[in-house]
Length: 376
Image (cartoon, rainbow, N blue to C red; front, side, top):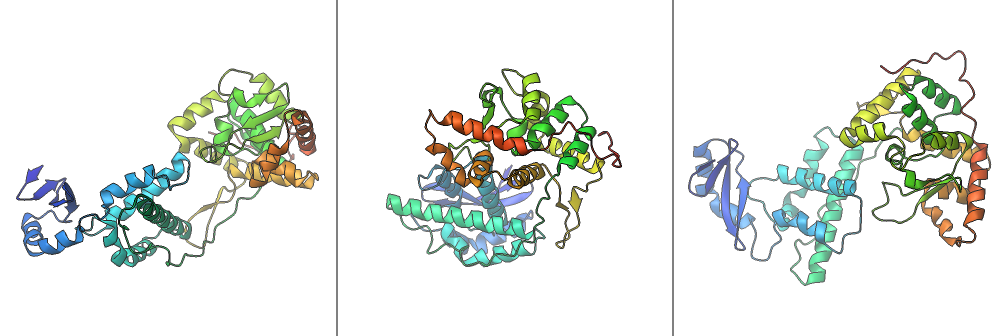
């Protein structure tokens, strides 16, 4: 690292140091040429200092930590928090040299939106970035008002930006014959058992892969799972009756730990590898997991979430009450489960077990004219 009168060379790029609110703030000059860096420092130094903000302005380097620790922020999962951080970090990487406070972003927010629009990202990702940045700004403004600090900016610059129409491809549901063919394509018994549990519970991928014995109650005949997606903001659990196929699998895999240990270990180290292995199984049975899309990118047509769609459709086709379906899928209407007292929980268990009785048995053979292949 080379220094040159308030200039520092880091990884081939010159940075300018300014003292703001009693602390050093570094901003990239986006050049590796020392003469150009000196010119920017000497000729534009006053402008850069002004852009660094006045006393009391919220610095960008302090903004996200303040957002994370703010009591105005609603509880969310670690993955959601990483999404906010990723969107905020992408903005910081794009910002021109010298902008270091939230107030300085207002005037150039639209330029960043144009940059996002022209970067080739999908409409859904574009909308997610704007939604995340808007939420971070709102929380910071609420936090400053709550603590009596000066407002970090006049308004939320992302609020008035029009969102793009997202032409997403919805997952198609797996039919019972699809599931039977997936069982033939499963590379080993653990994958085969996982497919059965996924098809007859409607649990999301992380909840099935990381299913623990603590969530399995063979005596009551139900699973009680706290979904990974919502456990950070809700105590609600998915309560699912066991079909005969699921009971058979969980009885054979009775353990004091993870029900699918090998797949769970792979998921913890390389979560993408589990998705890739399942995609191979889907392709092996003649279903195309990815299809061309109007935005020029391949979109997933069949995926692990297809189990969830298929499970719901089978329950609805079997005439199961919407309230019971919501309890098993842990949807918002699933709060009706809280109305059952402890004495009535046995009645709920019985209703849930009867509900999954409409699911087709997976022990029947797949359609004979379909050729299944082993996953390589």
